[in-house]
Length: 257
Image (cartoon, rainbow, N blue to C red; front, top):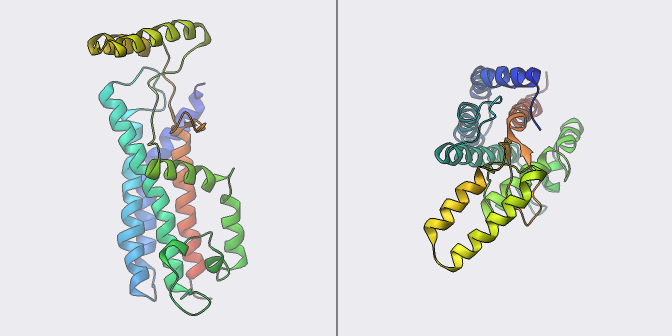
């Protein structure tokens, strides 16, 4: 599967726009009058610091692997790409935690007995937090949350990265005609390992890599059935969703006119 020329152009333009979008959003957050010093810290030193990292990750991902790329990545390119994708996922998810903390402080959300919420309950999906939000904001969160929605994908990748299997960009994908040869080389690789012939193993590994075609997707665990995600359109969509969420949070906290 490949992107159309029209989609490639649209994604490349969108990537070029995010620096200006970050600056505009940063100014909005910096000029917002938070009532609590803790909220201000989470907004400036948590949320916007993370978002700057996300911005840079998106730019570097598109530089390392442009949306129109069809050739395979070198080992160094693949490693750098995975580093930026991992930092990207971690910080997008972290933005959501910072937003939850800001809401918790600004709305003085506490447990039923009046004690501060435990750290593990500070979440946009926590019932204690949600009951303090407006109906419109709760509805918006519901639109992006859920197993098969945006937040479901993000949680899946973030939790795998943090606790199980990190994000990986396969060097290539096989066509059906190349599968028999791939399997044959795999058997030879296993034999080389048993013989502790590592030079032979890596030589065969290179032959195996040469069989497939590059496909710009990220995955985590093969055994868990990780759903491959085409990362070029996904990171642009993620950027738009998280920046929209920040705007909606400021609207939620703005004093009534």
